[in-house]
Length: 94
Image (cartoon, rainbow, N blue to C red; front, side, top):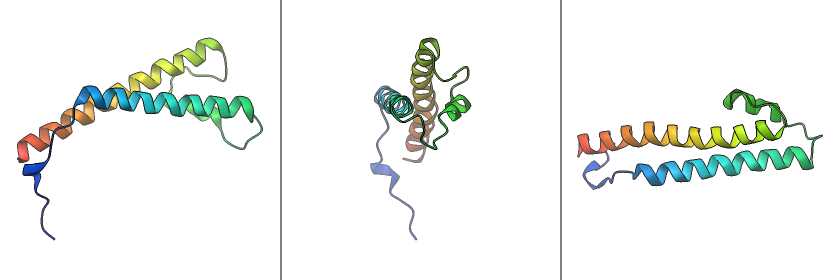
C-alpha cells in the first residue's frame, strides 16, 4: 500500500473548524434537551451529559446556559488542538 500524497493536502482553517464544531455540539445539545423535555420517559440517560459538561444538572435555566457555554468551549478546544496539530503535520510532511 502506498503512502498518501500529502503534498496536495491543505491546512484546516481553525476559525471555521471552531465555529462549525461549536455549532454542531450546540445543535446536538439542544436536540438532547428537547428530546428530554418532549419524551422524558425514553430510556436515554440524559443525565450522562454531566460527564462531558461539568456542573450540568437536569434541568434549570442556569444549568441549561452552562451547557450551551460548555458546548461552545469544547468545540473551540477541539478545533484549536486538532486544527493546529493537523496543520503542523500537513506542513511538516509536505
